[in-house]
Image (cartoon, rainbow, N blue to C red; front, top):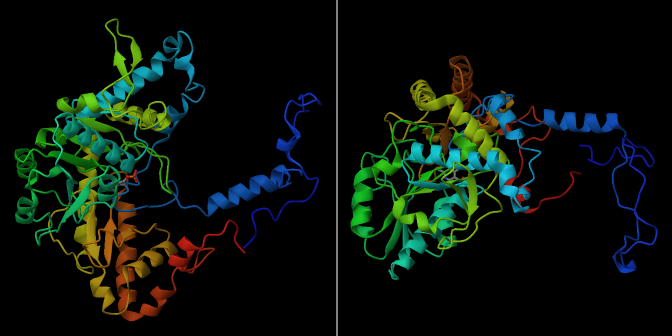
Length: 479
Ligand SMILES: *Cc1c(COP(=O)(O)O)cnc(C)c1O
């Protein structure tokens, strides 16, 4: 493999740098001056264009192929929402700080306010903050808001947060970051949090219950309203992990079911290309009683219809700069506005239909641990293939050879050899049929020639990695 800077040739150049206009007698002390020239690759424009174009061809994206990564909602993001994201590129985030600056940013402020209202309407909450920069960041913000609420009431003994064992790992992690101890409730054979064990764990030392519904098995919990009522009876608050709303848009509003706090991932449900760790946006919505504790500042609409940035003194403080990841908010605002109520309902209907189609066509060959109608994703186990020595990871790697991004594997943790497939609403039946054919082919190869699956992938620039070593012993360049 070629080193990234191996193309450098001294003196070769692709740009003309303007002459320096810094006076010779520089104000910088000698100690701060660079002694040696900076080490930059010296390449021509063509070398540079080829370098990045070739790198981009090794990248996998929704724009190139099917990407059924469960829980991540890798839907196609239309170019029209991309354009909306770029519209504000010329607007400096410090503009509101200038004298009279708020007048210059009425458009962006009305967008923040409008998006907050759209999200409040979709989720059934009373107010929303757009500050958090990711789902996990939203969870931590939401739990901090809950902690501030209990504290303000002088309710000091609550030190636990309850999470089901199927929860996304960020749930217990964020609650722990906010200072709570975690109580984990196992999944019952019917696929949801064990109700009896939950009731036993509930007491006046529990600050909050964090639920994902549909859960990470793709199942909608029929006891969800009862769970909220039980939590409220004990004085605890209820937190809804709405990282992925794809199954419930326009169908169920968590606020109506009994949830007090929610975060949503704009980068999953509401149109933003994501993956590889960013960028993200995890707005948090709350019910009335919690509004005082939202982060500061807030965008408020004044009597004359204009928008102002106002301090929110009782709140938990700032959780990010400005109002969060603005370009992502602009995409989400465009997405929600374009689709409208009917469009959003269709999004969830198609997402659920697609997942059930894949589930129905694969369950003859793959073990389905919880055999019921699923929501926006379905979770198989490679346990039958394991009898021939083939693991979920082998099937995942084989899919790469056949041009598909692997589904999520080994999550949720309560399913052995889990394969979690989320097609999203943007995929056609033809694309899903191709994927299903390859999954069935993988099951056949697992029976007939398991070794072939252990060798995959064979078509990629880098073959099977030692993933533990790759994560622990990272190198800046490849050798
Ligand atoms: C993705 C996801 C999260 C975390 O979101 P990030 O933006 O990656 O921090 C939390 N919960 C669920 C259910 C998710 O799918």
